[in-house]
Image (cartoon, rainbow, N blue to C red; front, side, top):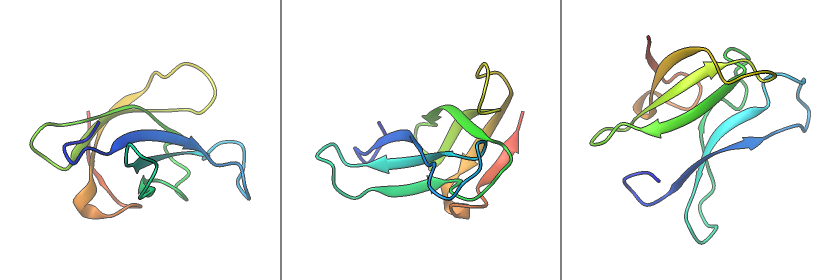
Length: 93
């Protein structure tokens, strides 16, 4: 859940995509309205954003950057939603 009450989730996008960059990050209101892309509908690296969580008091998200197939193990990233849906990395740990 984000500060604005929307639900943060990943969505499988197989339509017109390769097998790897298919899991984007999205939000939706609890009643199913206002579906919005948060990050990575066309970016191929990283393949998947795992375990995204909001950083309280900011528009940033903490997440794991990892391959699509396999364990959700990889770099820890911070996504800054102020930078846009295709360019929002503010750092990788």
